[in-house]
Length: 432
Image 1 (cartoon, rainbow, N blue to C red):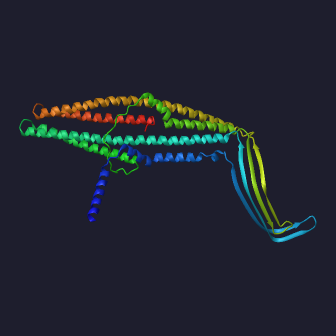
Image 2 (cartoon, rainbow, N blue to C red):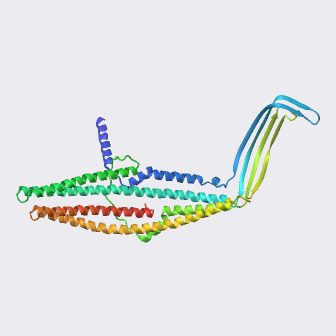
Image 3 (spheres, rainbow, N blue to C red):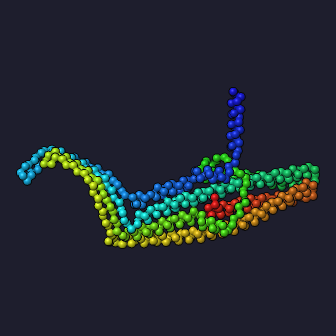
């Protein structure tokens, strides 16, 4: 039994260790951020509020029914003289009046204002939902940008470590050449100096990686020092098509769709304001029950119950131009909402065109830098071998290592910039 428990504990420990070493994927980072993001939660709350406001009762389409109950107790001196000469006198006579009513009121005509109000609430509900979608898209883009910034820094660490390994080989060759008497000591000193510079650069790069991880942890609503690893890979298979991107942006962009819903709500607000100028007909009815108990007087108690129905008509005749002002303000707001749509469309198209130019430029730059890295590696390999055989000097190897270092740096930067352009294009076209 003890052996089985020990075996289970060992398996459990190994499983936890493997899980801890499992790198955080971009999809996992996005899902974690969306579940914790404050901006998404705030947008979700706004959407919930707009949805709860989108009711027929809030628009005024349904009747209002109230129950009213009132009881009054009075203790007073009482004197009553009737026409036949009878007289009632009482000191401290009790009187009790109890009444209750179920009252209903319903605006049956108001120029369609309630229907316009319901359409406005529906547009605001859909606008809040689209705003939530935009917040999700924005948070996704922010997380992916932060994630791939961590990847960029970690790839740069790996490139620096590769250069350190190559420079250590160069140092060993220089020391062997000095020991054999075919080279001077400055070759060893220069190789050691370059190696120390690379090690210092590695320390700085590790600090940059830690800082970028802290930024990503903040977006994930975690402690800045929460440890994790990322997948050291940037997929660059994205192939954008200009016409498809522009069409998708117009059809799918939550920013444009939200502005369209805002314009619809503004148009219905104009209709509401105009409806206020017309007549308002309200139907009302009630069921009333009444009981009165008198401690003195000719009538000792009275009970009454029954229905009452009626209607009222209200027509605004003069209000100092306030209704006209409301209609004018609503009309101007509707025009502003329509203009915002056109401005957003133009900005979106411009942003897509600019990002496409950057994307294609980075694609070409990455292809060139991939070739440069291959060439620089081959050049360094040849220079190192020539240096080993005594056919070149240390300066040639140093120059080849510097060329490879710069090529790796430019390759990493081009890869990162290409990925950033892809994320921006996906954000602009709601393609996450």
